Length: 82
Image (cartoon, rainbow, N blue to C red; front, side, top):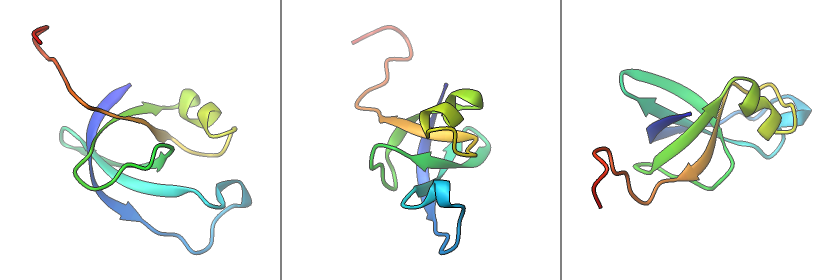
């Protein structure tokens, strides 16, 4: 899993049937930018949790995706404090 920030969207008017109705977001994780299928209604500026690889594909009913947004983060505690 990775944590990233939504920085944009991608639109595709023609796509595979298995991706019909799917929204795609551009997410920055560190120095990397990737396109992820959105399953939670995230938007620009949201901090999100991503899954990738086989887990992403399974989450989207075996659609050909490499990354999926599965959560919008409310808070991050990087040093164990509250």
